Amino acid sequence: MCCEKVSCRGRTGQKELVPSRYAMKVGELDVLIISDGMLTLPSEMLAHNADTSTRSAWLDEMFLPTDMMEWPLNVVLVRSSEQTILLDAGLGLDPNLQLPRAGQLIKRLEAAEIDLGLLTDVVLTHLHMDHIGGLLVEGVKERLRPDLRIHLAAAEASFWDAPDFTHTSMPEGFPDALRAAAKRFLSEYHEQLCLFDDFSQVAPGVAACRTGGHTPGHSVVRLDSGGERLTFAGDAIFPVGFDHPDWHNGFEHYPEEAARVRTELLRELADRREALVATHLPFPSICHVAASGDVFRWVPAVWDY
Picture 1 (tube, helix red, strand yellow):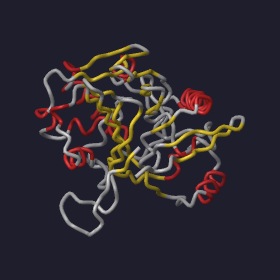
Picture 2 (cartoon, rainbow, N blue to C red; picture 1 turned 45 degrees about the vertical axis):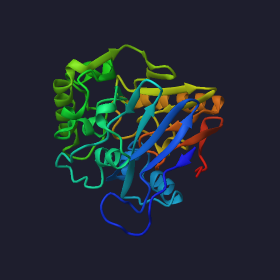
Picture 3 (cartoon, rainbow, N blue to C red; picture 1 turned 120 degrees about the vertical axis):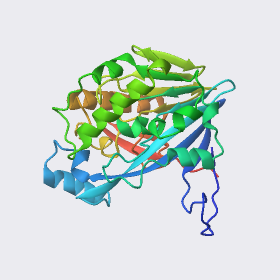
Picture 4 (cartoon, one colour; picture 1 turned 60 degrees about the horizontal axis):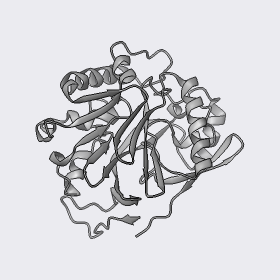
């Protein structure tokens, strides 16, 4: 692994004091983890089925605020010899939800000198707006290849015809914004969609696998090259999920199933000693999972400079 070095001299422009991208190798695959910024959301959304005092105690133990907190947003770029693959696309424009610190992906790809026209594939874990919004930014579609392939579970596309929000717990305005973003995306990119049922081999060593739970078509992406493996888990795993995999996240449309998927995935990652990246783990997110019964431990990777 290697870390992109960033100047700390306080220059303006595209220089940033805090690194926003992290480069590593998974076998023969080049992997770049990119921060799309931060979402400021109610802490209650981490576990709306938990007792208030229990949830507050966990947040306090983790040195996190008990009212509002910052949720990281991570996107992954994978490059093989033949393909350049974007895993999720960040928030894009703020849809009147007061999220000014998110939606940084496009400018950070430009800062990394990554041409959008080089993308051959996009894999979407699901159609929540913080995973597709970067592709809806004005002028982005025109910069993409006309033969770009966008891999998405068919169950996800179907779900957004009439999405069910009865089991979610979101701030006011979010359900409407999620519906609008998904509807617009499916309309604008329907010709590029490559729908799959449960599995899609996107490239040698890169596969999308539907898990369901968070949304019916939620998927994870498995990288497997040269004896090394990494899973991009999308929204299957949140920070609190290691200690309390049964706690329900406010964005989960089917929280009981999401908890089952989370526990199963964490156990598998621990057994396989496989590296993990997830959308809402603190940047750069790369870590491993340790297990003790039904309780898991998040083991951050050591940055390799």
